[in-house]
Amino acid sequence: MVSPLQPSDAPFRAAALTAKPQHLLATFPTYAGAEQLVDKLSDNAFPVEHVRIVGNGLRSVEYVTGRLTSGRAALAGAATGAWIGLLIGILINLFSAGSTSFANVLGSVIIGAFWWALFGYFAHRATHGRRDFASVKGVEAEQYQVYVDADQADQAIRLGGLL
Image (cartoon, rainbow, N blue to C red; front, top):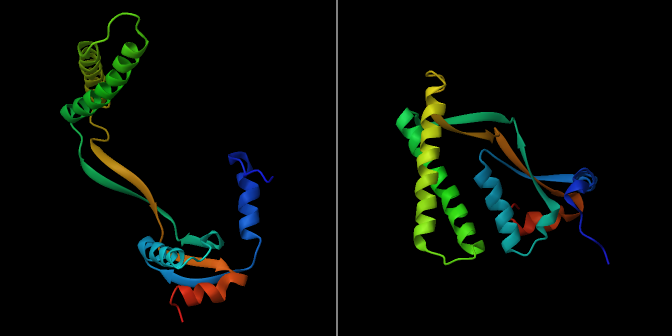
């Protein structure tokens, strides 16, 4: 029986995937275009484990989503604290020997929200106005190329409608 590769085998897996000669199927300006081609190949029963999407010209992009105020930091902290409080409240109810109640869970949610809101507020105030904005970071490429193992290229070209 063959065992699947473990996460610690990642360098070996990467070497095995790129050891075969590759054929460039197409180049796209967006990831969505490359994804659409691979999806089309998959829909036509092509063995997509022979396909690679390669992003060229990588750059880090940060999208600013809004201004971050002490109030918003407190609100974000409260939301985090409420989720943590919910988890703790449920765990307490699961493992308590006495009777369980909704009040225990609600109390945990309220306490968690309160303390994390305070933490969020004071943590933001401690920055003294540095980085007063919220953002989402990502990596983008200038172009995306779809490659296939050279021995599978003819079938991929036909099934992908690239003739």
